[in-house]
Image (cartoon, rainbow, N blue to C red; front, side, top):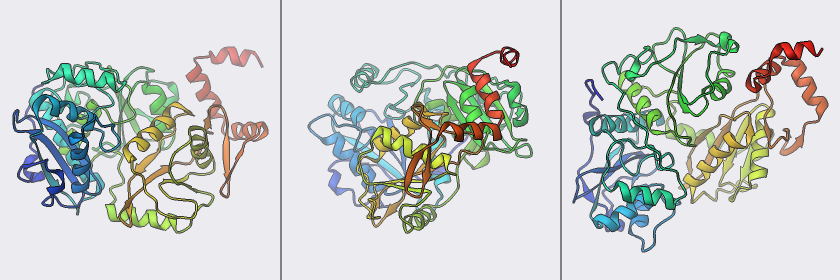
Length: 441
């Protein structure tokens, strides 16, 4: 990996390192949003760089409780817990932690600084911290305790794959719309109104989206199928919006994967913005969430108290989308009582997985974690269907008040008649010859 790597350390302002244990004595850590990192006094390596939009002290304490437990923790308290617990057994308990408070910053800036920190770390060391990207396991480079890491991933039922990112280059990190940005071979840019000439490949890779007059990106995503994912996103943008792509091996994951975060970090270095973010402050999001919850369940609001049923939840998401979009709140009872979500990471991962594996076409939701009355809930924003209909396991639902009903064939036929481009998209995705279809009529 060549090129001059930009600095982020002075912008962050890391605290001094303090021992992670005893975990109950971490009072110096502020109860504010920010980013944090974990190391060990025996190695001085960085094992985790993470962020929280809520409470640094609470998040770090949850991590410490998991690492310090007698039994290997699940990822419920902290997604990095199992890997760092394995490292504790190998290296000892002398973990140290450092943080940077970002309480006055927007979610966009917190995510941007986090991504930039990870991108710089990868650029200078050749690999990402061992406890990051636990869902994708596509870490590159020779890592310490690699054998231990692979065993722990297998025990978690995760697949270990080595992805080589040595072709990345920081020579042109600030040319975010360039054809060779970060050493990758990007295609020419296509306007959305040309998308149905179908230049997008049905292969793994990364695609990026921008407005024609802008020199910054609106969206970046790594995916196992560029064509399907990009088509889903492009139906929601202006017809002059530009898209380009690069093909490369990608490990499927419901979370941002390693290469995606590296590119997000490079973009933040260049533009001081991170693609696909609302740029709202945490207090703004909390106020918005309170406003929705004051209305209780309605045409566009669904409340879930706790455990999520796969069939019911996916049908609720489909019904909201097909009825103009809406909001799903997890951790709120039907009466509006805030009960919270203890395993919020797992719940968010499950929903993110369901909207891409169960719902057709994949539903692009946004998730937030507002804290109301000192209690964390999960907020899922569901986009409107617009010129498409969503289904869950082949069932089309729509919403009437707080009730969800099933669309009949007459409703579906009328919708296709009003939106004939849907039939063209179906033909493209199914690889059916359009001439064969026309000859049958």
